[in-house]
Length: 263
Image 1 (cartoon, rainbow, N blue to C red):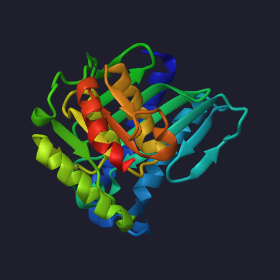
Image 2 (tube, rainbow, N blue to C red):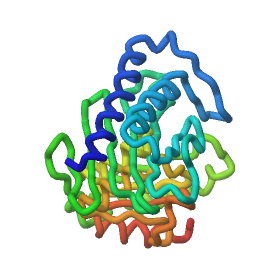
Image 3 (tube, rainbow, N blue to C red):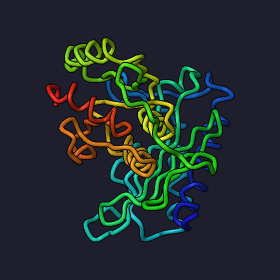
């Protein structure tokens, strides 16, 4: 395992320990609403501190872009290394004790993602990837699914929780896909959904309005597992636009064809 990936795994486990302890007594957690249906808990913040602490202790010169602290540490144009962190993706699930959430950590070098970790603390699932070295789940190599027909596919998505102006467009996409795939799922943690595409548990995924920390780690897992990820036109601007489609190569192209009108 690459030394920087080892550090990222250590950081993810440290963050997950904070989350696991808190999950034992959800009633004690202070929840704050950032904006409509966008929640942050003291656990998100504590997990983030634990993660950043591990990373900056190992690499004090690196920059950090983390969800809860915004533009956190050393972020400037000169810094070649940037860690992109979501300490708890699926906060709403976590608050309710619904066991579908994860820690997501990615490292970018000169704008290219080189290391990725997604850790699911409820199942002890550790998804990792190093650029050019493949993707793994608990030491087992990952490959995207072999499903080649949309009619046989299981597709993941996320619905708008905050911007209700987008709901009508979403319902149209929902209808288009529901009529054409075997099942559509909305588990509530985009980072974990992307890891599931890499693992072949989902054949494809689409969502609009995500943040870079939702996608950076999952994107590397998918490409290293033989999948494709892009925006709604199939191009590479998804980290900037927040609009993303992913899947095994055949399902990806079928999703692009159907969803292009909603780009």
